[in-house]
Amino acid sequence: MKRARLELVNSYESLMIAKTCKSNTTSGKVIYTLENPESIIYLGKKDILFNQLIACEKLIDYAKDNNDLEVIQTEINELKLMLDLVS
Image (cartoon, rainbow, N blue to C red):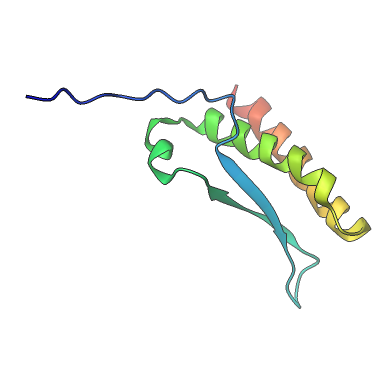
């Protein structure tokens, strides 16, 4: 009989990828995709927010213009505020 092996995920590694998207009605927003969708089960709100923050900070290097940079900075500020409230 095989034993199931539980793989623990280090919550300080980025589990998400952030991307910016624009629409005709808004200046843009940041969206997130999970690299491993099953890992979300083991994360709490604080871990999810922290991973979104890491992904957003990585996204700064790939900003195409000032509008993208402004959207990313706004998202980072909101995530930091939410992390402070959750902590």
